[in-house]
Image 1 (cartoon, rainbow, N blue to C red):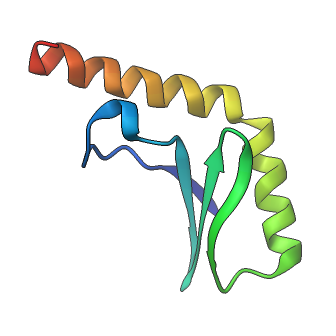
Image 2 (spheres, helix red, strand yellow; image 1 turned 60 degrees about the horizontal axis):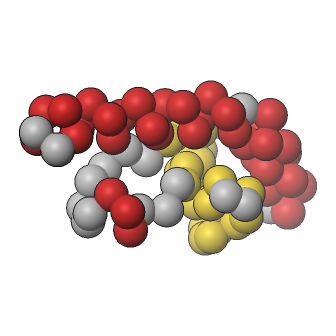
Length: 80
């Protein structure tokens, strides 16, 4: 199973909500990070979702730092 930090800028930064996507085979889930909360689930069992949530909580700081760093780079590149 892999956790993928969604780093796409479709709207203005202030309106983005920090989230991650988790995919395995044909299963998919989206979790908000503040607070850690399931946003969408396609096929994962409740047991899997609990495991995923624990993984996200354990790595939340790193995920937040990567998210912030990504958008800082975009701001610099766009001259903001």
